[in-house]
Amino acid sequence: MRRNFHRWVAHPTFATNILAKKRRAVDQLSAEVGMPEGHTIHRAAKRHAELLAGVSVHTESPQGRFVEGAAALDGRRLLEVDAHGKHLFYRFEDALVLHVHLGLFGRFAIFTKDAPEPRGALRLRMQGGGATVDLRGPTACELMDDDEEMRLLARLGPDPLRADADPEQAWRRIHQSRRAIGALLMDQSVMAGVGNVYRAEALHVERIHPEREGRSLTKVEFDLLWQTISTMLRDGMRAGRIITVTAEDAGKPRSRLKRGERTYVYKQSACRSCGGQVTAWDMAGRRAWACTSCQD
Ligand SMILES: [Zn+2]
Image (cartoon, rainbow, N blue to C red):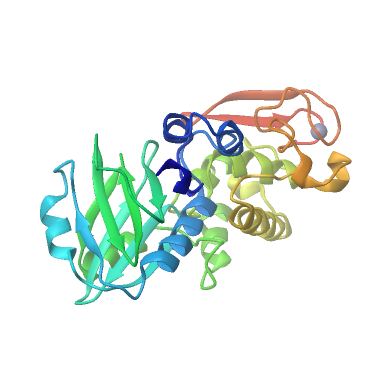
């Protein structure tokens, strides 16, 4: 049954346990240790919709922590799966919405043939059309009504992966803020979906130091930063992993980049564009990286 396990897993620790024999697949995931960023969530939404949308879904909570919610959804047709930043919304018939946020430890597993017997802390199992989606360890797994969903969405900034994103909304917040741009990018109410890796990489590509105040950015700098973040997230969504280094800078095709070669400054000691020293420090509880010569 394990051979049917796909790489649609948001957390590498889980992958390490399940895919002990598939080291290569694990390697591809391990660049993304930590909270999944928006590209992983959008990719999950797309994949889950491909598998389950349009069919009646059997839902259960083997772990017992989402029994009532699973019972309410059980047997209903899933209409669509939507992502906004790091949040997932599964819309079922009869206006039922399942909200999922993976947080740091949540992860999905997909089985397209026989699913294993449920065991351990399996919060939610969704089955339909021959596919199984398992959810473990999420920060949020709850039913929401329209009002609750609207309130949640109102708290989120624009998501560069969404067609309806309005970058001006993020610009207004950043333009008025004395907070560091590195902290602002990670604030989901300013911009939704950016995590630690893309923060480090996008700021590096735009030569902006993470500690610069938001209000010090020019509109042109912000526009380019938004563009870079959007492109990086889209790339990540397509590839299923984070590669920010261009083939030109790497001197070889991006597909041949090994772990540790895929980022410019994130978890690097020397900058992969200029060779300069990379410094790392704590910023709002997460590690920040910057090149001492490219970024000021
Ligand atoms: Zn550099």
